Length: 210
Image (cartoon, rainbow, N blue to C red; front, side, top):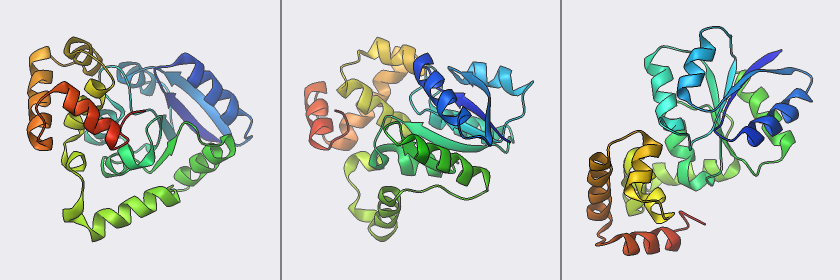
């Protein structure tokens, strides 16, 4: 059996994924949690083969969790399952240590296939991700400005553009409002923008938010 832990801050999504994977026959969901703190506690008592991980988590993001697990020396194969399209976070997730990336709109059969692929030690890459990877290798100097942002800067960009206030972003990312303000200033400078309104317009224009 492939032992899976689901990490997502929405209980309904966790329940849906548990049902989908449970019907596969060769997959057992051994736990589901809502954030990194709960994951750490669970991993003290439960063995896991594949981690099904969301990007947008309270406190430490999914990308932060990937790096934390690597720093702790945990050899858990991770499949990132996110609401964000492949062109937004897939390459960042793979570079942070994930073995695969899917959006939450993926077909249940595709999610099951991805878990099996990652468990077998192979990368799970959709055609969209393959194209994005190829573009990043062949055209490194032609990346859009937001593709050059750090992970934290990119998160700050998308959250501000989604209408979040700095205090809300600080709470979500477990940072101080002052630190978030620094990230905001860096984003504005790197993108050549002057206000939150311009930042939001940029995000919409480039398809970074719905």
